[in-house]
Length: 213
Image 1 (cartoon, helix red, strand yellow):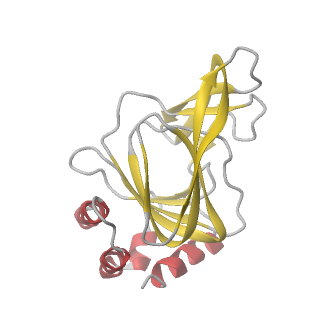
Image 2 (spheres, rainbow, N blue to C red; image 1 turned 120 degrees about the vertical axis):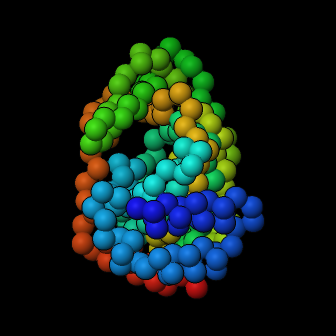
């Protein structure tokens, strides 16, 4: 765990300024890719569609995650916020990030849901607040570039057609709950666990990390 903690802190430092993909790749290679992914407690498929590798909390309570976005997977188009500000750096492929302007409107067909953490997953809870989410800005992010999401901002992220590999670092979590704007009929409603990825996804994750220059 200490070795993982050092890796997380090093990655966070690496992307805090101008991100350097070569430095990030070197840190990951030096740790050992097979060792990194052979950890059931740290690797799972996220409800938003990507495969997530969790590193230990930073000393300030912030998070570091490596995300593998398999090509052809189904990604969330539901605008959502986080309980922390984050920076995401594209290591491979490209990402499309959309930011949304969320406005309360009683007659809207979409609602704001709270996302609450449980021991082995998350659950969404209706707030009774109806709102519209309208696209405000669209960003196309290439390898070596980053995008920042402020605390409480609503966004969606998805990869280009060939998939992507990203690393994120966050500020310490706030007391705000993550929010999602969607319909009560959403396929992602209710409980979402943290399932172990399929072998093909782990294989793709490893290959993506190994191919970093």
